[in-house]
Image (cartoon, rainbow, N blue to C red; front, side):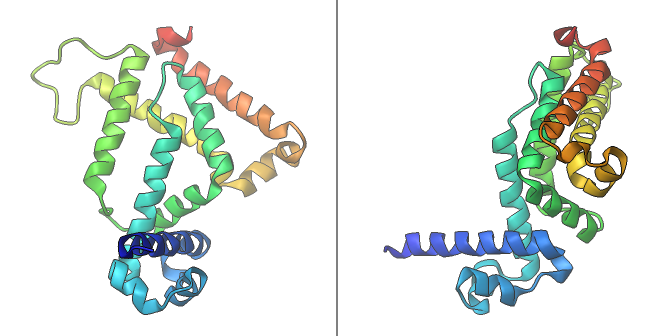
Length: 212
């Protein structure tokens, strides 16, 4: 095997092992030794590739978020169904949400790669603003750098859609306490998804001609 392919393969093995470890234990509880053992390499190799456990954690988060963005895609004109897509993605990939929750617990302030991540969300907000039909053709000179009033509405709507869609996966204990075993019986998950989509449709309908 060429050296380049070997290096890429080793790095991929380390990231996969680290993702499992960080998702299960977070940054504080994860152990480099367990990651190395699962990947079949030495601990020194991890530091050679990534420099530190924290940088490895940041690399795992970055890879997971790139995968998330690829699988989910941008907001569509049917915003309610977009909430359904978010729900589906996290129900199929609960590990991603666990990683994001560990990230929130670990970092107090700025995040690694914060600027490109902010830019991605701003792009989603712009797309959502157009889908809502609330994007103004002209912007007043008094508008701030963060965007127009319609962008603020779209940003709040995006946050609400995400929150609505991820809560059952983020807090399974609350879901169980409220719904009992309803979500676990055959068809129960489909019923919950359909309800989330209906709620999302009501939420965006007043300002979205596409959903009337």
